[in-house]
Length: 243
Ligand SMILES: C[S@@+](CC[C@H](N)C(=O)[O-])C[C@H]1O[C@@H](n2cnc3c(N)ncnc32)[C@H](O)[C@@H]1O
Image 1: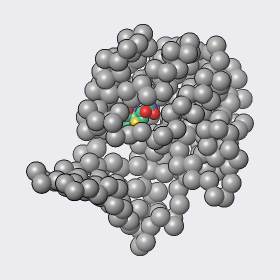
Image 2 (image 1 turned 180 degrees about the vertical axis):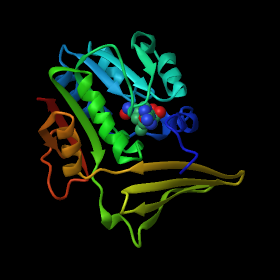
Image 3 (image 1 turned 90 degrees about the vertical axis):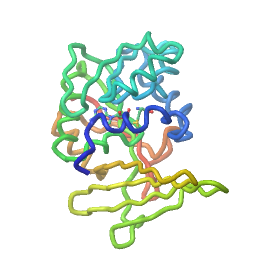
Image 4 (image 1 turned 180 degrees about the horizontal axis):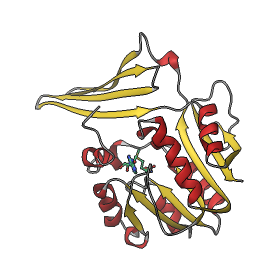
């Protein structure tokens, strides 16, 4: 999707993000993230509107964040406590901050928003550069599954009601591991489109990206409550540590 840059997600979604992007696991995520952050200096990559950063800050976590979208950061700032979280505009593939952190995290499939493998590798390398010795990096993503697609595509009905329908269409390129999503919203007023390109990473491939950056896998769970990671897991929460 040529017209989709690092800031496009926020331009399209900042207004409606909180209402329409609730994974249903926020409390569980905050609980595990707070435990891993402890008293350490913590960085959230792609902090968005502060879905988890705000409750973490409320619990006393020393958190800083960045995002490619000024619109998403503006929403964070407008919320109670939002002004107390230091933020900046930066790209996950190329960020360069002056601080060093004990713990960093990138959740809600957001590493897949980098749609080229080399940018995903750079992201791991930049995280490693920003960690203190023995610092940790947590990543949460869905586990890719070829079964979701028939002939490399899928169409799903996400919502149907009296006056509207949401349909999600996706094309899969198994060669590049790219997914091109388009959400189509149809109402009596008309049709609107919500595009999202992604590149998924196999868990083993992610571990190699981490290794290239000097980070080693120390935990992989199938969910935020430390569920075991198995062949049936549809997501993973993985923790890497700087060696
Ligand atoms: C799914 S949201 C996640 C936001 C937040 N971390 C959460 O869990 O609610 C994805 C976020 O990634 C940001 N983003 C997308 N591409 C980015 C990039 N290349 N660098 C930094 N942020 C990016 C978007 O602006 C958006 O805020």
